[in-house]
Length: 297
Image (cartoon, rainbow, N blue to C red; front, side):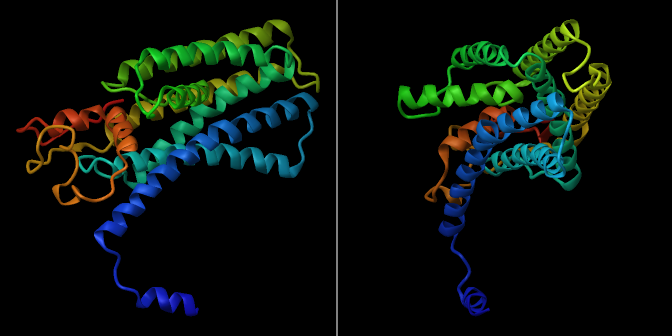
């Protein structure tokens, strides 16, 4: 209670304090996303594979699986919202837009994790080979996009390796330019790989070692994927917040930043990622005469 009174009696935070808090929150959001896909998602896939193979699931395992899926989707939403705070030309997500964004990430993530988990349950000796093969392809793709996020080559390759792991499960944009084409390529690639995994374990065996028929998972995963894809299209077509043109901002590298924050702490790395993720915000901020445009996929 005494600490609460002390906080209540403190002066309002300065603009520098608020900017520094934003600076730290952006890094925290990105690190949380990395932790989610480097630790939580592989563990979730492993637990789900063990449950499918054994045919038994304790109560805490079911709760853990559900909360893990929700936590991964929430980390994606939190990172997306953090990126938008870097660009004043991008209005914040509303409650409805946030809910749809959360749902389509959840529905697209579930079939991917399920396909890998089922493959792991049937052919555990080959899952590492599959991951390494797909990861190398994605790493090559990230390298070809010419990322320039870290200050030295060694750190940059570590960043690329981390991004390739994220791309193994979900979408993550890392380079400048319009993202619709790259997002489509990534979606088709993951879908093709998941279909290949499904075809492998369907032709290999129709029953899990636990006696569960594999066919019951096909309509579940397919339905979730189609619903997630439909929600994703709906989000970017009708619910994605539109870009506002700021007439008092100048062209150039700082055209998306408010003039009054010029001397305040700015997380330039995450801001660059935001410009990569929302390329139209950069384009439209430099074009007078357009009040708003649709956000890019």
